[in-house]
Length: 444
Ligand code: SF4
Image (cartoon, rainbow, N blue to C red; front, side):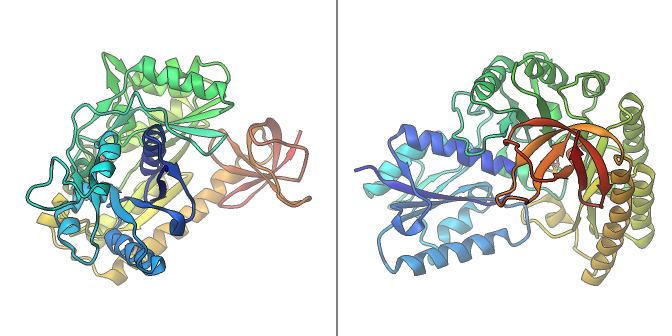
């Protein structure tokens, strides 16, 4: 009888995407899936290492699962970034008693690992008498180009175009857990997007840890966007996350001129101070970041720009934080994700820098930036009032009279009154009101 798998996902969109890959790989090997962990024969947690203490949450989940199962047999394993980042700790932790630990580049081996583990055999990579399946090898080549993800959403499809990262930002664990950059062939990506269009998807979001460093056989990211935009049926193309150092003129032009490429970009700033940016190993200065924003806005005046900022990076002084405040005011971001610095084990910053900015200072800095951003977001959103824009319907009100959620090209949520819409409809809406977080509109 086919075994049932319960699969839960933590962390970023790339992890969600990997879960879709794992579903395909295991389905093809004859496994079934269940949403009820009590019915499962195998439980997999696809984990993330990016946040501080992420492992505690996962350890707590495993403990809870075992408690709920009340001794009923089950195989439990860890997939994803934590598998590579914390492999030794995971294997040595007797309380977790994991059956398998499989990193992001080894999912094709999962069916064999599960067979081995189920039979009580040791996997080829495990030494001694340890019966657990273990493969956290990082590959220079694996892109899963030949695996079509089992998607559950029906409007936007995430398409990973590259994997890994070569940047080694000092606060980030990704290059250690997901390995070096590698890109999928253009034709292979376009084939996948064609298939998605045939299934009714209207929007694709191209995904990569440093998506705009995509390069395959001389084809760069700008070229890839152009090729994907030629697919009939796909109305909108977004991408995440780009690095500010990888914006050649060709990419600025495609962003500005290709009507299917959404006029929105997420441009992680992280800090407005050059010393901190150097400590973060970000490979740009504040002036270079600002010059890029000016170039993008000149080419595409309607471009919405969002960002990530870290406050309280080790040794950040008040004056250096003020540089970030100044930079945010200068750019006038549409939205920001602002984080307090926290130590990520095994990163360069964790090894070499002391987390010396007091918690209350970090808190006051984040509060200040969030307030600043709320004001800027409101002003940015108000600029849309009176405009008529195409918006893509994302969800229709469940109850008659409830609001309909749509999104404009700039990635802003637009609330529409209840109406006879279907998810995926592209309608024209007049924006009538703005708040810092959303717009309100009426269908034209
Ligand atoms: S660009 Fe920096 S922050 Fe982004 S994944 Fe790579 S190392 Fe991490």
